[in-house]
Amino acid sequence: MAELTLSGITKSFGATTVIHAVDLQVADGEFVVFVGPSGCGKSTLLRIIAGLEEVTTGSIAIDGVDVTGRPASERGLAMVFQSYALYPHMSVYKNMAFALENMGLKAPEIDARVRRAATMLRLSDYLDRKPKALSGGQRQRVAIGRAIVRDPKIFLFDEPLSNLDAELRVATRKELAGLHAELGGTMIYVTHDQVEAMTLADRIVVLQGGRIEQIGTPLELYNRPDNLFVAGFIGSPR
Ligand code: ADP
Ligand code: MG
Image 1 (tube, helix red, strand yellow):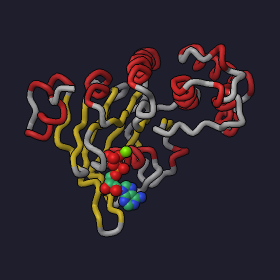
Image 2: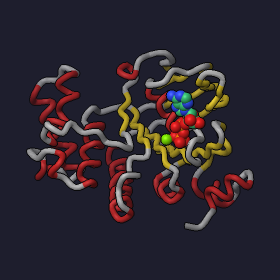
Image 3: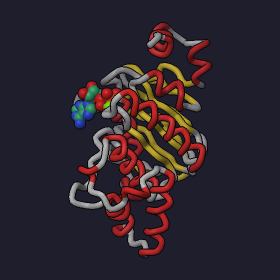
Image 4: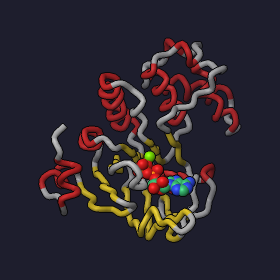
């Protein structure tokens, strides 16, 4: 588990600034959800935290250590993407074990981690299968499993459920909430889905045009939105 601090984060692509002076503090073990319309900068901010994108100005600290400019591999994070690119020629087991082998872990430790994650994600019966022999929901759980086995300090999720149909989305969402309760990790979760945000978040960060509009618990945002944008985005019935 880890705390995360963003200070004055700005990001420009050429002459276009897409993230404007973002300050944010995430506590140890907190589940924070970034919401906002398409193009508001959610993925860019997540990629900046992950170390996949450099900041233009500002700094990032994890557990009080400045990691700005440090590569992704040194930040103790794991990221789950929307397009959960599994290795098609590898079994479920190998998909989860692969990164750990590259990290130089010993086989018994790898085996223990993979089997523990598989139990949590109800994948124990599928460890020998290839991804193409799995359902969409099972594949997404393998992608989450690949993050879990790395035992990261912080989990980053970029719209991990958006490729699933509505029913599976609800089921996987509940699973994620259960995982957070079980693992207790710090989680940053990006979505454009208000229901996901309201049900998963300890706190929600509402973004618009690369700026933070408001930060608060789901109840705070629902009951006391700072402006019409937040009210419309959080409160709109769906
Ligand atoms: P979201 O995830 O909220 O939909 P993004 O973070 O993907 O938004 O994008 C925020 C803005 O930054 C958009 O206007 C997008 O076009 C722009 N953007 C993102 N990545 C790049 C890039 N590599 N080069 C130029 N513009 C980018
Ligand atoms: Mg995005």
